Image 1 (spheres, each protein chain N blue to C red):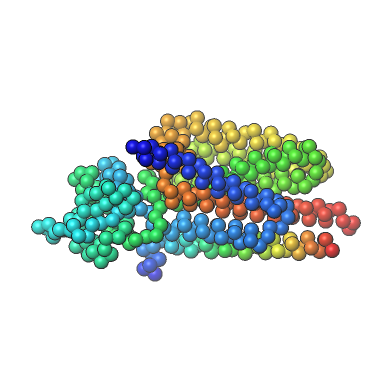
Image 2 (spheres, rainbow over the protein chains, first blue to last red; image 1 turned 120 degrees about the horizontal axis):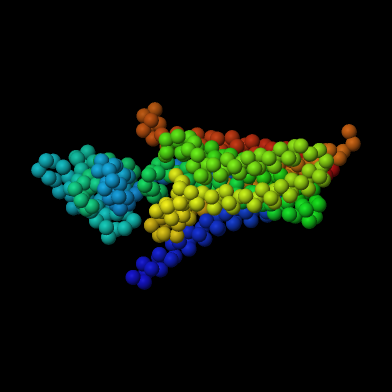
Amino acid sequence: MMGASRTAVFLPVMKYILMLGGLGLGLLLCFKPSLAARKPWWWRTLAIAAVVATTVLALWPPIGGSIADVVFEGRVNPIKQVPCYVVPDVASATTTDDGRTVMQTADARTPALRVTLTMHAPVAAAIRDAGAVPMIILMRRAESDLQFTADAVMAIDPPITLPYITALEERARIIFFHVPMSWIATIAYLLSMIFGIRYLRSRDMAHDDAVVATASVGTLFAVLATTTGSVWAKFNWGSFWNWDPRQTSIVLLLLIYAAFFLLRSAIDEPQRRARLSSVYAIVAFASVPFLMFVLPRMLTSLHPGGKGDAGGIGPLLSPQSDAINPTKQVLFALSLFAFTMVYGWLVNLRIRTLALQRHADHQPS
Amino acid sequence: MDFLTQQPLYVVLVTALMIWAGIAWYISRVDRRLAELEQRIKR
């Protein structure tokens, strides 16, 4: 009992440590050695390696659910097939009168959970060939919560598996791209506000460059988050755009920051432009917590975490241990780190370009 | 071809990696050119 309660506390704590660790390390490296100086070779290599690792680990491992997932789906839809991560007990195999094979099978992540699996000869042959190793089998719930039908062997002894998320299934992989982009856009606007305050205090044009760079790359990330979200919405909810509260709030946010860039383009005098855009960056950020965190949680939403959502604040932030899978959490932390590094690199390039532009403007023609 | 039609996720993976390779090449090129300009100004 003590062990179970410790796990119930440890897993959510680890989840938040991993998320904050990925994001924090990425942000720390954005400012080290310097936000405005050229990044060293190891930094650039690390950024590229992190993005490649995130892409491969988000798209390559097979999805393997638990027996509980098959039960849950089977109770709603009896013909629903779910890829399940199990260890078949090949030695227990028997053959029924109608030629089908019956085998005891354990959940690979919870070995104490054993159920009966019935299958036709080709599936039984594939399992026997593989032996008693962990594998992903396409399963359906049969007569009860302890009896299942195996339809196909999907993967044998995979080194990594991703969890099965009900209603998302294979589409869940986009979490590792869409969510970090959205989070980093929010952080970008926060950084823009901070550099706006620093500019107003110091009147140093380098801080104005940082205001523009952080906001412009942040807007790029917000556009990418909207685009990836639209693609996801098409395949999950049936249309690219649903005027969901979270979709509406990001459009409002993009309009607010579009006005920021319009304001800058309308003023020629550099000091005045820098002063006004710093004030605007500070005022604009006041809307960000409301649009990104408050409004979407006040209204009924297709996104997780909306008003009346039984899943609480959503599978990524919920401290409930059933929403936690170590592989998913490590991969999510890696994706946060990778996209923060990409953000930092793009901001670095933008700041250096603006500094060169300013230098060129001061040169006699 | 059978492999690609039966495993569409690998097509997505290869496409995503190709896009990232293009982005990485472009960013590295911009980074190098900026560094050259910065060096020229320093001199």
